[in-house]
Image (tube, rainbow, N blue to C red; front, top):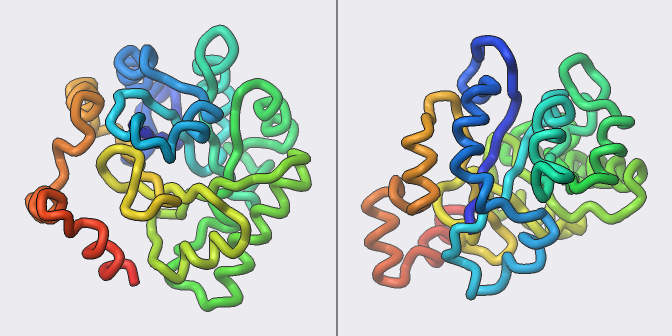
Length: 240
């Protein structure tokens, strides 16, 4: 399975690499929409090796931007699609340009699964132990209090993580931790899930190639270590 990650969507010309115009999103969606699966289906199958190299696509959005509600919600839920995951920075809910709790609660009733993107979007790898625990536990508790059910997904801010970070996340009760690495969904640990972080430099040709082979742009070191069965131990050493 393949996981795609978007951020803000806009009608005007994007002002940063992680914002895509509506036209850019539609060009991408024309390619991935037939393969979209629901967050529930992903969570049911993500540990099953039979689905590890399929072309099914899970759609995710980070930061809790207002465009999750105004643009993604009508495009990919209900009759328009099976839903998506939205990862929320809980400290900025309700600020201009971001989701309100009312929006989040409505989306949660109609096919959107919410996860944490930490409390303040700090780089978790730079935090002391107490601050790290606070970032992952407070955001989880806030979402669960608002949504009324367990929240077990966390997307690392900036895609930054190490063993200390994922240990704190697992201890807090998360079970599915999302990165921004290339490749199919399954990472080198069973609780880590790779995503392609989309930028506005990635045109339809790039997306088509990624959907055909998510590992196409991985480096020579990955190819050699994978062929020798060394990728997992090397990555565990790197992220010690």
